[in-house]
Image 1 (cartoon, rainbow, N blue to C red):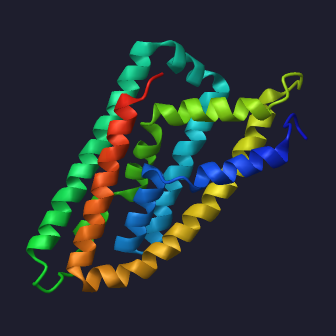
Image 2 (image 1 turned 45 degrees about the vertical axis):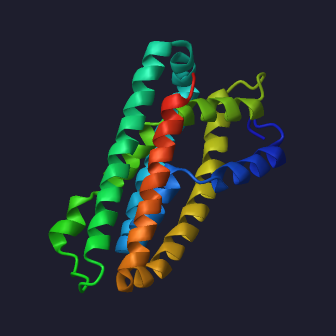
Length: 215
C-alpha cells in the first residue's frame, strides 16, 4: 500500500513505541494536570508539530547527516540535554516551593502565570531538541518502506500519519487522566510536591540518558 510493507508489524511496533514514557508525554501530562484540558492539548499540539518536523527531516535525510557527523550530533544532543536539565531544575524548585508552603492555602493561579509558561512552544522545543528521536524515525520508518517504490516520500507520509494518529490517541488519554489528577494536586500540596519532584527527577534522567547516548 503506497510503498508501505508489512503494515501490521509496523502498527504493532508503533503502539509499543508510543506507550514508552518520554519527556514529551510526561510534559503533556504535567500541563494537563496543572492547567486543564485546553492547555494540555496546546502542549500536545507542540509535540505533534515537533514530531512532524522530525519526520520531515528524517525523510529528507537529515538523520543520516546527524548520524554521520559526530560533532553536529554532539551539539544537538547536548543542547537537548541542557534544555531538559533546565526544565528539571524548574520543576524541582517548584516542588520545593510547594513543600515549604504545604500548610498554607493554595493561591489562585493568575493570568500572568498562566500565559508565562507557553506550553506549545515548550513542548515543541522539547520535541525538536532530541536527535535520538530523529535517528529513531529514520531507523524505524525505513524498515517499512519498499525500496523499489517510485515515491518513497509518500510512504513516509503514510507512516507518519499513522504515527500521529497513535500519538493523538495516547496524548488524549494522558490529558484526560491528568485533569482527573488536578483536583487532588490542588487540594494536597504534599502530593503535588511529590509528583512534581518525580517529574523533575525523570526529566533529569532523560537529560542524562540523552547526553550519554551515542550517534
